[in-house]
Image 1: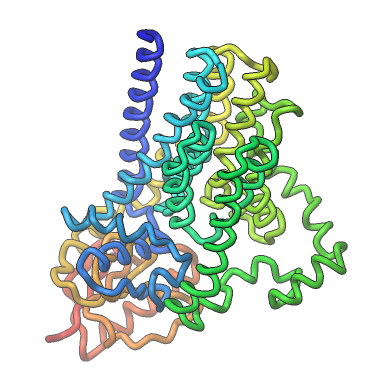
Image 2: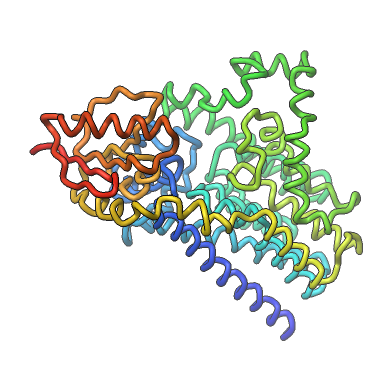
Length: 466
């Protein structure tokens, strides 16, 4: 018992240290003006507006935040903003959500009969899994909360704790509508292979019901036409230009997608996913991967590279099931590596090879020469007035009703709709953005309704005349 308590204390220490590291990393990235409007400013604005009792209409999307992905989890998150409105709450929640998954991993490992040292090693491998570190650096995404929720659902099912199970799957579904498909797939695995028939049935029915309710009810109701028309259909345009056409091609013309499915890009993606934990894979332990089928299908069929890497959020729902395979494999005496030191060493090498910590020595320092000027310009936005700015500056000013970013795709804009315009003409997302920013500065210098209140190092703040 004392040994078990010591092992559990180690897990809590690892979670605490890892949470602090992730929080510091995401905060430093934001501090250096490397976070982005899409998606951090979108979510920060929505949570802020909810906390103020306002309708969370995203000025970036043009509709209610529930019309985006039916993410109800933003409402409880707003309670934190009631204490003090700050985007750093999102970084803290994300850091804790990503690392707390080590706790149910430890419990699942011990429940499966693994030694304390193996349970700690698997939890360590999870914390060192490159996606955990990388997604923490990519703004904020509510689906990070679904990762520990899925782990807890599986643990609750194995312990026959039905209320914890129901609460966990509700939380997972409330993070993003599409995650309900993962919940349903998990239900099939629980029903068929884990012999948890009641739990499997609940997950299947809940997942399907929530997906239908969210996509046919919540999203169209709150998002209107702008949200109802699938904004991501371009990622699958090779299959057709509408869902009925895509379905017909998938069923009657498999050659349309088979070439895309069995591509070198998809092979590379699968290798990236598996290589950090390949040491714990065995054929007899693969059944949990049923839970990954919806996410893998969506990602493998997409003609969109961010869905096929270990940087963006799209692969997060796969994580719990990868580590279930590892636990099941080691529990039956299989797997290439079964000793703590070997597992930790492999995981550390994978982390060093695939984690993006190097950005702090290069990419994130690229605009350091204008950091002080940008910070001062942002600090001079004194009111809750509307703002037009750049993608990288927007998350620092998004706690207001109206803010938008300039876009080369829509260059014609009425400046008078804004009270403040903050631009950096030295560092922009692309050459097109830089050209447009310079053009805007030249126009605003001669605009009768605006005056230049700050200029330094190619950073400009214009304010509408009172």
